Length: 318
Image (tube, rainbow, N blue to C red):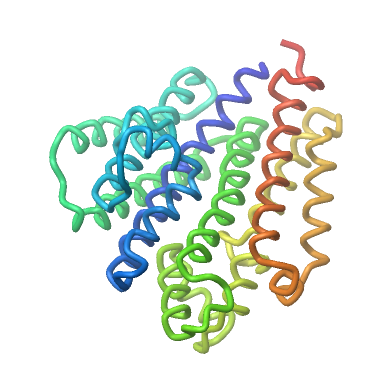
């Protein structure tokens, strides 16, 4: 496979996962905004801009932060490369350039999603419609993943696509937790409100019922942090996502009969995470933990790029 082909498959799935997670971030901000007090007005919207690393870009185009403008910027803004509209376009474009590597079912889902989103963005919407728009994006993203799982060969193409999915998900779960922590920091004295916001976070991740099945009905920030960071059966936990990154890197190493630096790095990150406990994370500083693993995930992406996408060390010969 050409390294350029591998890179397009990888990024196509990173972008659709990013679109879904941005929709989930918008949904959680919308729901938290319904319970926010006047003193913290717009904190949830600022936190999303920070977590998606577009606050500076947003303020360049907008003089102030408010719900309506942030929604538009993150959903439809063409100048924002990480907007949901652009992420869907990037997914479609990357897949379009490697049509011979994907099935017709995969192409039909992303192509129809793009066409429908074009129609939606040309009309008007109300803030109250944001949850429905977010639900629509999540549904389309799930359909695309289903098409990939059920129709793609379990080949190197499949591994590169899943590599993109799970690395993006690992990065985004860090951002998701960071949004909650920005609005209502860990160890906030307002326990009732804090627990309620954690509950919103779980529901937005479609993980509320699964949390209760795993940890019971009594909710605490320690249990939720463990569920989102360490639980190896939760498909949206940090550990689960990184473990799947490692699995697909191992598959690629076996497929090409050559172990990459990316696989070694993924093993080290998993090992380091496995040695931690929730108590240690809280004691040493939750923000420091989030920043460290955000850096680790970015460094792992660099290793993947260098190993497979024409970087310093490349296993392919184009």
